[in-house]
Image (cartoon, rainbow, N blue to C red; front, side):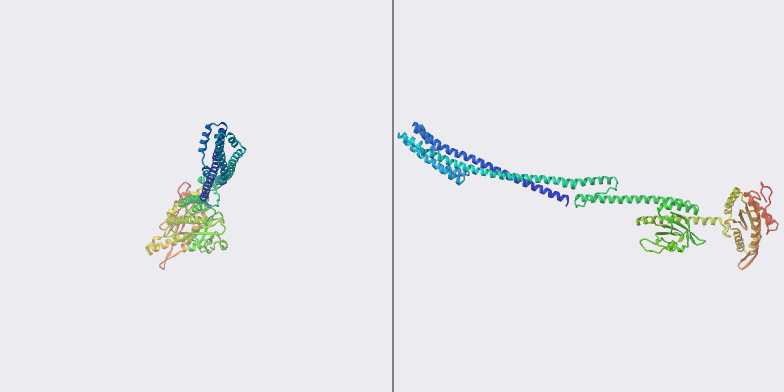
Length: 602
C-alpha cells in the first residue's frame, strides 16, 4: 500500500477517533450536568419542604403563645402567617413544576393535609382562649393528639424528603456511573488516538520512511560521488519509497552504462591513437622489414588478446608467406596458396564462425571451424597480403565487434602502406634499371659501387670489376637499324645478367658499355668468369625480323681489388684495361697491371 494511502487512512482514523473522543467527552459532561441538576433539585426540594415544616411549627408556636399569654400580638402574627400560606395544590404544583414525582407528591400532600388539620385545631384553641377558656385551648394545643398530628406532619414531610433523597441518590449514582463510563470510553478513545499516532510515527515514519530514506540517502551520496558499486536496497513494497528505490536503481544502471560507455570511449580513443601512431610509423617505413616490425609491435596493442599473422603475397612463387606473427597463433600455417583463403577469394573479410555459419579456410590446421578472422589486404583490386587473427575464448560479442572494426582499420592502413612501399620499390626499380636491357643503370651502379667499396675496404675482401664494350656496335645500327641494335643490347644484357647469381651486379653504364661487379672474386675467379662471359657472347646468335645479325663480340677490361690498387679506383683501372683491349684488336680480355699502390692503375 502506498504511503499516501496509509497516511490518509491514518489521518482519517485519527480524525474519527478524535471526534468520537470529543463526543464521548461531551456525553460525560452532559451526564455530569445531570448529576449537578439532580443535586441542585434535591437542595431546592429540601429548602421548600423545610419551609413547609417551619410554617407548621410557626403557626403552632403562635397559637400556643396566645393560649398561654393571651397576648393579642400573637393572634396578629398568627393571622399574618396563616394568610401567607398557600393552598395545598398550589404548593404541590410548585413542587411538581420543579420535578417532584407522583409518589413523592402524594406523601407531601398527606403531610400538608395533616398540617391543614392542625390549623383547624389551632383555630378552635384560639377561639376557646378568646372566650376565656384557657384550659381547653391548652388542652387542644398541648394535648397528645395534637402532638401526634404534628409528628405525623413531620413524618410525612420526612417521608417526602427521604423519597427525594432516594431518587436524587439514584439519579446521582446513575449519572456518576454514566459519567464514569463515558470518561472511560473517552480515555479509551484518547488512548487509541495516541496509540494510532505512535503507530504512525513508528511504523510509517520510522520503519517505512525514515529507515529506508537513511539507507537510500547513503546510496545516493555514493552514487553522487560516482561510486556506482553502491547497490540500492531492494524495497518490494509498492509505495513512494519503492518508487524512489526503483528510480535510484535506474539512475545507477544509467550511471553504470554511462561509465561503461565512457570506458569504451576512452579505450576507443586510445586504440585510435595507437592506430594513428601506427599509421605515422607505417608512412615512415623505407622497406618491408620496417613495415613488418611496426605491425608486430602495434597489432597486439590494437587488438589485445587476438593472436595473429601478417601474410604478404610473394608474386614469384604465388604464395602467401608469413611476414610476422604475434601472441603465438596456432591454426594457420606460415605460408599457403592464395586460393586456400576464402577472404582472398572473395576480396572481403571472412569468419567461419559467429552469427552466420560459413566455410572454414583451407589454410587452417585441419580445416577446422575455429573462431578466426581473415582480412584481405588489397591495393587497386589486387590482393597483396592477408591479416589473420584468432579470437580469444573469453571474448564477448561486443568486444569482437569493436575489435573487428579496429582490425579492418589496421588492415586498411597496412594495405595502404604496403602498396606505397611496393609502388616506391617499383619506382625505385624503374629509376635504377635500364628500360631496354632490364639491368641496373648508372645511377644504381654508383650507389652499389660505393657500398661495395666501403665493404671491401673495411673487410679487405676481394672485389672484381669487369667492363665490357660491344665491338663495332655502330655497324649493327647502320646496317640493320636501331631496332636491331636494341636487340643486340638486350641479348648482351641477358648474358651478363645470368653471369652471376648475385642480384644487382650487372649494369649498363650507357650505350654499348656494360659492367659486372663481382664481390668476393679473387683475380683467378674473376678471369674464369670473364672467359665464360666472353664465350657466351661469342656463341650468341641474335635474330631480328627473321634475319640473323651476325656474331657478337666484346672487349673486356678486368681489375681486382686489392691486386690492382685501391677499391675506389677500381672502375678507372678496369676502364683503362678495356681501352687497351680495344687498341689491341678487340674481342679480348685485358687484365689491369699494377704500377704502384698509390697511383691509378691502367
